[in-house]
Length: 104
Image 1 (cartoon, rainbow, N blue to C red):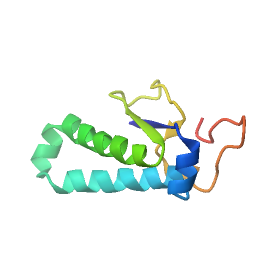
Image 2: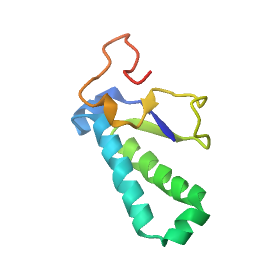
Image 3: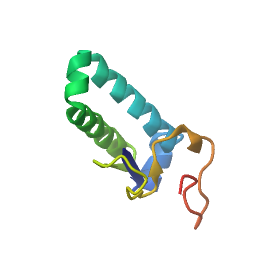
């Protein structure tokens, strides 16, 4: 699981049209690239390194458009969310001033 926080709203608005959607697409691309570079046995044996590789890519790409990405080792609902998960249900809906993020 990865969570994100928009740390530079000006950069997020000027570099990409929708930072949430862009980050979600980056997550899909990073996961496809990481999975495609490994044999199935390697994926099943070492899921942690696969997750770490995807998080590393997301941290780097998110920083380019003002979004901080944090990785989390837990996969439960008890994990702390900063702003929201990387999920497509947030598409087309942005939080207004003082309003919590739609995924919260």
